[in-house]
Image 1 (cartoon, rainbow, N blue to C red):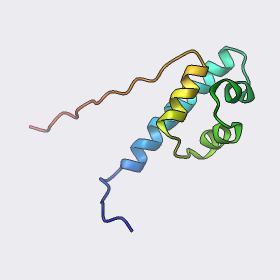
Image 2 (image 1 turned 90 degrees about the vertical axis):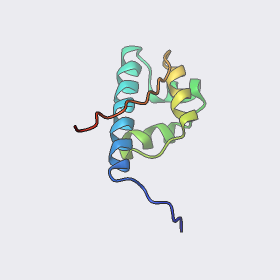
Image 3 (image 1 turned 180 degrees about the vertical axis):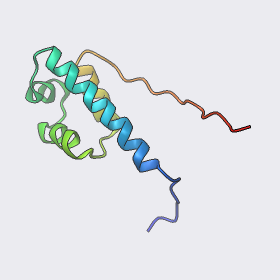
Image 4 (image 1 turned 120 degrees about the horizontal axis):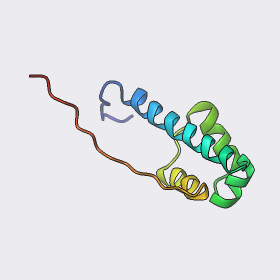
Length: 87
């Protein structure tokens, strides 16, 4: 068992980010008239993996997310946004 402790709300933050990306993928896919099978074929990501991440917010690798973005004609941007400190 890992002794590393997680910060509070890490899972919730991760799930919110993934949900947002999945929603954007779905919108792009529908806009282009593609099926999940089309995205799977072009991205090289198994269709079952794509379906699972949409339904259960699984824990896809960054490689999987980038591959899907590229298959949909886009890219992924990641940015660190510092929280404002209370004064």
